[in-house]
Image 1 (tube, rainbow, N blue to C red):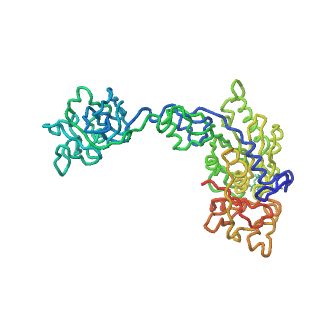
Image 2 (spheres, protein in one colour):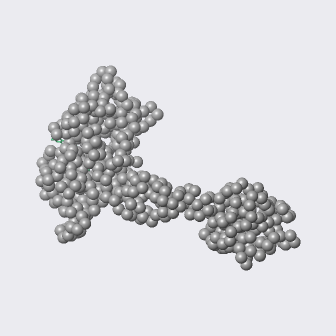
Image 3 (cartoon, rainbow, N blue to C red):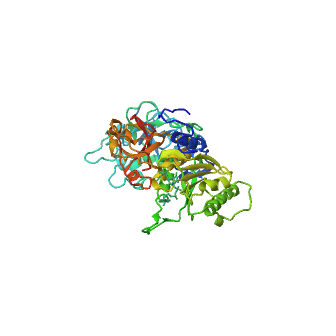
Length: 513
Ligand SMILES: Nc1nc2c(c(=O)[nH]1)N[C@H]1C(S)=C(S)[C@@H](COP(=O)(O)OP(=O)(O)OC[C@H]3O[C@@H](n4cnc5c(N)ncnc54)[C@H](O)[C@@H]3O)O[C@H]1N2
Ligand code: MOO
């Protein structure tokens, strides 16, 4: 037996056959398989982890483009003769720009070969052709409602030759929304006569406001490592780099078996019945931990229904393997055919209706965790079926089930992405209910130790205590009986209190928000 950094002993401990809480979590992490890889469309990849590094299928930008609305000019000194216009998404200017020439250009439009820099409208002085009105250089159809075309008189003043247009008033980009200059319009060639004699001047630095091909991302450059979680930004980046599908470890699908003849799914439970309080919290927890919620089946008490459901799942798994034929029809599989992992709620303890352990044995499962020295949640199970699929057994008491899910299920679903929680001091520990004698805890400690809050500790078992983070540390919220989720609903974390805890900072396990 050894002691880890959190002060827990590791190895078999506490209840017969059970392992310590840190060891149970470590076993689950070791058991987490790399979930199957699939090529999925971008929206489907959201929340999954990349199975392969993300490479750029195209350079970004793909060609040299303008970073500003203005004029692409050739040669370092103006004035430049305007010879056309290029819009984003339109035709490129098909001639090499000669020194002394310029094209009006939109942000994102391809910069013509030969261009030295882009002169933004704000820095440009446009001079109409001598003896021609500004209308002569208007784009076809004239400027859109109120905006000023190149060389047109700006509001509130006359535009004499050489006068600078007000920044942003005239612009290719402004004309497009008005439908004046269609996307792709290019005024080189015959249309260039409209520009005859129009010049533009200003001061440019070589290369200024030109985004060069591959400047953001080079062709074939690796931008993200395998294992990266696909966030909204990753989806946008992948699209920008030319991807329509991504190879991801698809999110494991979790099927849930809810046992218990006394458990009802809706309405007011009659005396002797209880509402299912575990089924409702699992979908959110599974999604939060990176899984996908699959089928939920209600099973009557008894070994046979549990045996049948798990055996069918194993057969469904074999059918799902490439090359396997025959077997059960989809309708017979009870919705378990897609599941990578099964969670069984209840039936994990030692009562006459608690058959999970025996059924797993009958099915030849390898039981990896059979009870954990933790309160609440000690009758929790982790087993691997002969086909490799994992079964997590959660206790029937709802808060115990939540604590067990955070112990085994979340590490299994997160795998390599799992990170232990931060450490925090425990404040106001007196609010927490000291563990009661018996199966759910031990007698509270008395004296100065208890006043420091050490009464929360159990001599042999870890305790998981609902807390809320505050400026003064984590504050136990109370209401933490195994059968009630009240405390967990008030809390934002479970404090992990090691056996024999003496007041040092404790790990906080996040609760799903
Ligand atoms: N002789 C022993 N008895 C018990 C032990 C033990 O070690 N020895 N452990 C106790 C602890 S701790 C727990 S937790 C429970 C776990 O029991 P099971 O996992 O077998 O679950 P059940 O017996 O079916 O139910 C326990 C309790 O929870 C209620 N329940 C069950 N399912 C749900 C649900 N989906 N939603 C809400 N409530 C549910 C059920 O009605 C029972 O009250 O065993 C102790 N006994
Ligand atoms: O799992 Mo039980 O207390 O530990 O409710």
